[in-house]
Image 1 (cartoon, rainbow, N blue to C red):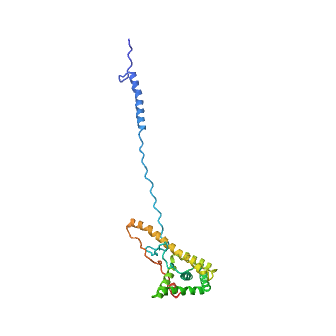
Image 2: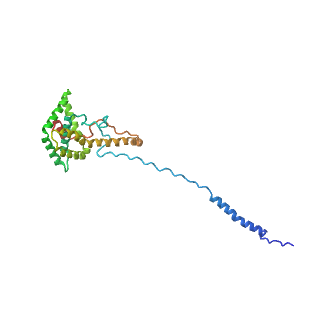
Image 3: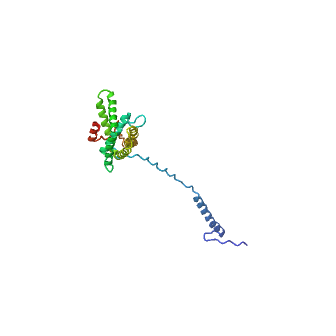
Length: 253
């Protein structure tokens, strides 16, 4: 005679209850396994911002709308010291050093004045000849040649009198005067040809720095406010020289 199996309180036999009990962990593990394999969503980071290009800064002493000389076909600025004869080069060098003696201040002031006066004495005959021949060049062109000559000398003195680069100009003038002490009348024209560009360089470097700033600032200004850029025009420089310098230029001192 078969022995009836025991039943639990719910009327289920022990074997069925055991099977149901064992099935629950298997289902739970399957669910956990499905959750653990859920694909991860990766968010792509945006690329880093591109740094803005560095903009040149306006050189000290410059101002918006400042005039700079135009450039020639060879890239140089059209200053009063272009297309000179040998006599013109000598006389323009003397004019630049004259401005230095009149305008330079500070520790080198006395030395510059003394060296300039010594140069005038040492090269007196050569300088007189250079001035006479340069005047003859203007006279040969006819018309009101004296007015043209005087106007050119005024522009020349005003060019070297621009105050924005006074310090580097005075350093160059002091060095030029010191080196001129060993020049003879025979070698001085060659010396003048070599040193006139040195005296002019602080000014042309200043023009180039301003033009670089202006070229870089035009696109930025247009994007920011659609405003106009400062215009350039042909000029020998921005700031005119003093009345004392202009007077000295006309007198040829």
